[in-house]
Length: 293
Length: 295
Image (cartoon, rainbow over all chains, first blue to last red; front, side):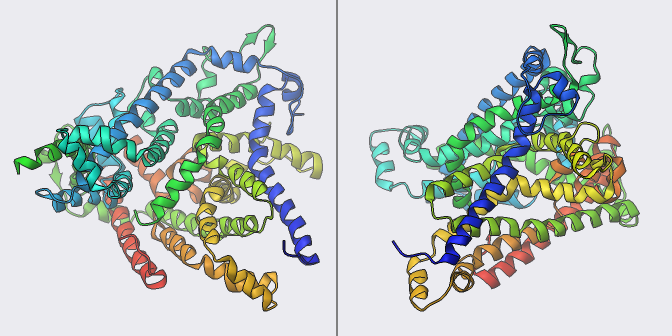
């Protein structure tokens, strides 16, 4: 153990305070929102709630959790996240595996076909017109899932991982008589599971936070996602609709503020409770992506 | 070639999806040179050459959103770029590894929260009637409630501070990785030579993160005409258009809401073009300075 000078000790104390300040800056906004959402209505109405809750009142949560639009949005988001991530991974892995082959006719051309999409895109309006006018995918879940199914950046990440799989392992599959699909899904996939897991996390997070396609392509409440629901509660006219308005629950009026704050917490909660367990995949993924895509 | 058939089979779904959702819109950019009418289609719509381009290039609204986009991005670089570097430098000096890990994990949290949630929090705490910020200003300084999100002078700081809040932790990951790869013997040696903490930081730590800093800075400069759509779109309102309206939100309004497809496609095309040139140039720069490039 090396000796530390007085200056270093003073710096260390300051540093700890800096870090505690950083933690507070990150956590206080969320804590405040949470505290308002569970505080009793008088404390909320008289603006007494700071960082900690005052009194307890879960009426807003009960009201939201029994709201059919919220329930439907939640189910939609869960299903879209699972289906979208699963399909993405399958298609991405198939492309990555094909492109990792040493040779096939037209490999160079096909590689360009994929890589070009990373640098050029049609932009908002042409994409919107294709999906909405030509394919007429309005009010269809396909408009949420299909356009973003293939992400070439992840294809490249998976491909570079596939190139590290020993050729002997692949050949042993062929000798046993397996075809390309079986070699890929039974022999190679298990070997690159950590990479697939990391890529899945990125895709799933994007899917879970998706709302813009809902704004573009759907006109029905039963096609909302959680994020879109929250956008309408906080920024839209959702609460002005009498059907959804906070009303009498057990002779207790829920202030719209409680309702909004509880909505924020409910939409953020699933991710906030999962992220400590998956963050290491994100860190690895970000670093893997930066070391030449 | 028949040997390759299974490979084409693996590629097929991806190729079809990209043709429909990527290449079709890419060729759809031709409507920028048309007076496009949806029910006539691309074939029958009238060709107008560069008229759409001439229109927006002489439109002061376009130059306003262009200026806003550039200014917000430059402010974002000036104020936002150093934050993860400073955070990583301080974090790296912590003695306790467990405390380090804990702080770092907490700093990632906002990255996982969507912009809808982040913008909802911003709106809630800045509310003039019920927000905690105005409450605090009133109780401590006796200041009358301020409608922050409706005032042009506060809009950009709000956007930039919330962006920093959301991403500083994740962005620090790059610097932490660079810092952890510095040879500890260098510190040991400089210690024996009598170098203090500040000199060590200047001569060992900062050179250690120089390359990644240049690369990340260059990437940000490369995306000067692109700006995150969600944060602006969720937080802005007509009262702050003069400082907050950017290319992506402007494109959305005139394209989707006013259905002026050809004009919007022309703007989108120009943006992609400028963007590509910037990315290309900055990529060259990165190669020259840091020996690193995207391609």
